[in-house]
Image (cartoon, rainbow, N blue to C red; front, top):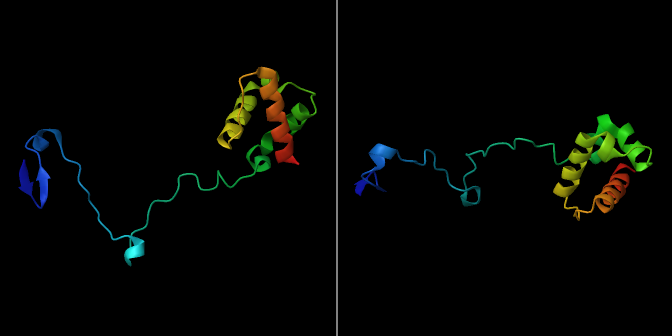
Length: 113
Protein backbone atom coordinates (compact mmCIF):
# COMPACT_ATOMS: atom_id res chain seq x y z
CA UNK A 1 0.00 0.00 0.00
CA UNK A 2 1.05 3.57 -0.61
CA UNK A 3 0.46 6.60 1.61
CA UNK A 4 -0.94 9.36 -0.57
CA UNK A 5 -2.56 12.57 0.75
CA UNK A 6 -2.87 11.01 4.22
CA UNK A 7 -4.85 8.03 2.88
CA UNK A 8 -3.68 4.46 2.47
CA UNK A 9 -4.28 3.43 -1.12
CA UNK A 10 -3.67 -0.13 -2.27
CA UNK A 11 -1.43 -0.61 -5.30
CA UNK A 12 -4.35 -2.16 -7.20
CA UNK A 13 -6.38 1.03 -6.79
CA UNK A 14 -5.05 2.46 -10.02
CA UNK A 15 -6.43 -0.53 -11.89
CA UNK A 16 -9.78 -0.90 -10.11
CA UNK A 17 -10.51 2.66 -9.02
CA UNK A 18 -10.88 4.31 -5.65
CA UNK A 19 -13.96 5.63 -3.92
CA UNK A 20 -13.15 8.86 -2.13
CA UNK A 21 -15.02 11.27 0.07
CA UNK A 22 -15.41 14.41 -2.02
CA UNK A 23 -17.00 16.67 0.61
CA UNK A 24 -16.46 16.79 4.32
CA UNK A 25 -18.54 19.06 6.55
CA UNK A 26 -18.73 19.17 10.34
CA UNK A 27 -21.92 17.85 11.89
CA UNK A 28 -24.63 20.40 12.69
CA UNK A 29 -24.39 19.66 16.42
CA UNK A 30 -20.70 20.58 16.18
CA UNK A 31 -21.57 24.11 15.11
CA UNK A 32 -21.77 23.94 11.34
CA UNK A 33 -24.98 23.80 9.35
CA UNK A 34 -23.53 24.76 5.99
CA UNK A 35 -24.17 21.36 4.44
CA UNK A 36 -27.76 20.55 3.39
CA UNK A 37 -28.72 16.93 3.09
CA UNK A 38 -30.75 15.87 0.07
CA UNK A 39 -34.50 16.20 0.16
CA UNK A 40 -36.66 13.12 0.44
CA UNK A 41 -37.73 11.69 -2.90
CA UNK A 42 -41.33 11.35 -1.78
CA UNK A 43 -41.96 13.86 1.01
CA UNK A 44 -45.76 13.88 0.89
CA UNK A 45 -46.43 10.17 0.31
CA UNK A 46 -46.32 9.33 4.01
CA UNK A 47 -48.42 12.31 5.06
CA UNK A 48 -51.37 11.44 2.83
CA UNK A 49 -54.48 9.93 4.35
CA UNK A 50 -56.02 6.81 2.89
CA UNK A 51 -58.82 8.93 1.43
CA UNK A 52 -56.31 11.19 -0.29
CA UNK A 53 -54.13 8.35 -1.54
CA UNK A 54 -57.03 6.39 -3.04
CA UNK A 55 -59.34 9.31 -3.88
CA UNK A 56 -59.85 8.14 -7.45
CA UNK A 57 -61.09 4.74 -6.23
CA UNK A 58 -63.35 5.75 -3.33
CA UNK A 59 -66.58 4.59 -5.02
CA UNK A 60 -65.06 1.18 -5.70
CA UNK A 61 -63.69 0.92 -2.16
CA UNK A 62 -67.02 1.81 -0.56
CA UNK A 63 -68.77 -0.74 -2.79
CA UNK A 64 -66.31 -3.37 -1.55
CA UNK A 65 -66.89 -2.37 2.07
CA UNK A 66 -70.65 -2.65 1.51
CA UNK A 67 -70.06 -6.12 -0.03
CA UNK A 68 -71.56 -5.04 -3.36
CA UNK A 69 -68.39 -6.08 -5.21
CA UNK A 70 -65.47 -8.41 -4.55
CA UNK A 71 -62.46 -6.13 -4.70
CA UNK A 72 -59.97 -8.98 -5.04
CA UNK A 73 -61.82 -10.51 -8.01
CA UNK A 74 -63.25 -7.50 -9.85
CA UNK A 75 -60.42 -5.02 -9.17
CA UNK A 76 -57.32 -7.10 -8.39
CA UNK A 77 -54.87 -4.25 -9.05
CA UNK A 78 -56.61 -1.98 -6.55
CA UNK A 79 -56.88 -4.89 -4.12
CA UNK A 80 -53.12 -5.56 -4.33
CA UNK A 81 -52.39 -1.85 -3.86
CA UNK A 82 -54.57 -1.84 -0.75
CA UNK A 83 -52.89 -4.94 0.68
CA UNK A 84 -49.42 -3.42 0.16
CA UNK A 85 -50.60 -0.11 1.61
CA UNK A 86 -51.86 -1.73 4.80
CA UNK A 87 -48.84 -4.05 5.07
CA UNK A 88 -46.63 -0.95 4.95
CA UNK A 89 -48.72 0.48 7.78
CA UNK A 90 -47.97 -2.61 9.87
CA UNK A 91 -51.16 -4.63 9.33
CA UNK A 92 -50.55 -8.36 9.51
CA UNK A 93 -52.27 -10.63 7.02
CA UNK A 94 -52.36 -14.36 7.72
CA UNK A 95 -52.48 -16.02 4.31
CA UNK A 96 -56.11 -17.09 4.63
CA UNK A 97 -57.92 -15.51 1.68
CA UNK A 98 -61.25 -14.92 3.44
CA UNK A 99 -59.75 -13.75 6.72
CA UNK A 100 -57.29 -11.42 4.98
CA UNK A 101 -60.10 -9.94 2.87
CA UNK A 102 -62.15 -9.26 6.02
CA UNK A 103 -59.13 -7.68 7.75
CA UNK A 104 -58.55 -5.47 4.72
CA UNK A 105 -62.15 -4.29 4.54
CA UNK A 106 -62.33 -3.66 8.28
CA UNK A 107 -59.16 -1.56 8.23
CA UNK A 108 -60.28 0.22 5.08
CA UNK A 109 -63.66 1.15 6.55
CA UNK A 110 -62.02 2.57 9.68
CA UNK A 111 -59.62 4.64 7.58
CA UNK A 112 -62.33 6.03 5.30
CA UNK A 113 -64.78 7.09 8.03
